[in-house]
Image (cartoon, rainbow, N blue to C red; front, side):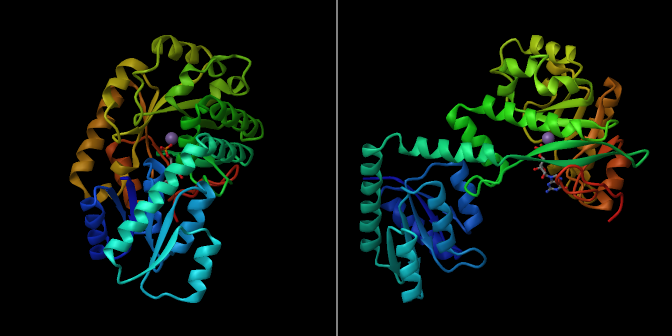
Length: 372
Ligand code: G
Ligand code: MN
């Protein structure tokens, strides 16, 4: 039986040799050099088994095992160690490792264990095809219960004053700690509308007690555009329409959205303004200008990072600011982390600024500073 195996080891050489041995046996190997890399892989990729070194700088393989089983109890994890001890062996059993192998590895043994792990996984899936979904559903609902909204200030470049806040999803559910994991889970479960409604209701409630002169920036997923709740004048956020800018990310395509023009028109009728988010990160970019006629654009932080030292980024941002100025669109530089980035963005014509330099996202409502 063949499968997709995630291999985690901090030593490049070991990682490569392991991956080669697995590929030679007909498996697909996905390599990760640390626990955080491994978690990122698991967020976007589905694997059938994990082979993981225990001793790694920072977070250990044992910790990965624990986190992994919090998300997916059925995932077989084979732990490797160069320094076996009774203590780690006991922990491995307690956390439900599939097997505990000592280095130097015997290849036949490793491949045999990987084969067993894949058979165990497929048996478990055959017995409980809905198990994984039910588990994800449970984690998603607990994430919904523990949902909260962080706010990050946005400042005007000319006055240096606060003009508003971006509302950002945050989760207290340990198995879905980052916002992308919550969005992914919602997408897999077909629950994006449920998530979007819960978010907008919480944001609307926060705005009720927020500074009244502020503008609130709210991220909407392309799927939300098809949700009647978003366009419903009685929905909680609709009350605040004229104080809200809806951010549509350029990373996702709007192609699947039917009646896009009519929906955008309906949003404008509710007095919402519209921003293109993450401009420069995706590929849809300029076509958004023609279809959406945004009031604002937000430059992706990948273009902002160290812009003061990168002439290519400077050219790109300059041409964007020149383009949007002629269209009467305002432009926010996002992810500003240094005074040098801030000053460069201003010199290139950015009208608004946002980033850790001014304030990190936090519970309503963080106070910004111009300088650290
Ligand atoms: O895709 P979008 O622009 O909505 O993402 C905003 C994300 O960027 C938030 O999760 C926020 O925490 C993060 N963020 C905000 N300011 C900064 C910054 O200055 N640097 C970095 N690296 N991330 C930031
Ligand atoms: Mn955004």
